[in-house]
Length: 230
Image 1 (cartoon, one colour):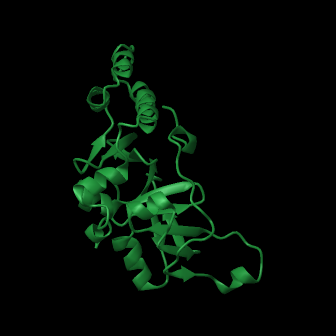
Image 2 (image 1 turned 180 degrees about the vertical axis):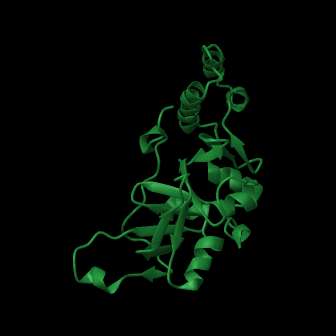
């Protein structure tokens, strides 16, 4: 399957300056020598995510990725209050070229029960479409799936051939639907993945396709998205 990359869905790039930080933790030795340090930006709402305005900037948190999945990320600070914020308040985090979304936020707001408690999982987004990229164990193997974040119906929807056909039908992308369903072995994951990215490209440039924030405003959830995680 094609690897999702920033350029596939025109991902927003976060700013490294002019950011609003409620909590900033800087190790003293970082000012003395040139050493690489992980800076993690935390966001408490979709409005902040879309505006590239983190609520908090943490420097040098302890970061762990739990095997065998390598898709569950954990952040830890020495301050217990900050750990509560990481676990209970924030919607998403970014570091380097990665975006991660809080599993607890997804559980409480979209009924998603994959992932490990307290973790953040990889996701990709633009102003119109967002999805989670997650790998989980199935019997003796690991299965990788994409989960479309349905902001209107407040669900996490596994990207399958039937879901993709439904989305293409709903939004009138009938040429894509015909090509997709006319493909040989169109239910195979690699075919579904390819046309899912085609759907994302079409939705991104479709003026009739609502933005994530427009949907959340219509549902009355945009301003209290982090309230739901507390």
